[in-house]
Length: 71
Image 1: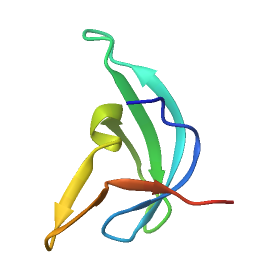
Image 2 (image 1 turned 180 degrees about the vertical axis):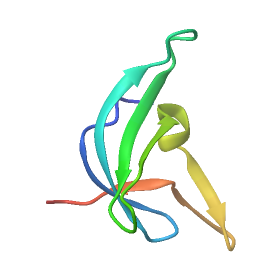
Image 3 (image 1 turned 30 degrees about the vertical axis):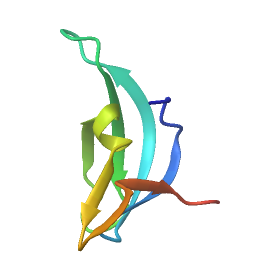
Image 4 (image 1 turned 120 degrees about the horizontal axis):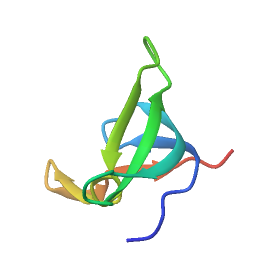
């Protein structure tokens, strides 16, 4: 799976996010990604790293859920 590195990412639907850091769930010790939307109210969110790194299918195409954007 690999650890998610801090930085800018693009979601497969097109919006951009900034990964701030990873953390561990207190009960399960699952790796979680803490990130911020780079649009609107710029809310903070958390998502399991396993989900962050998933390959998703949309309109018959397979692609990463999030792709790192070179800075």
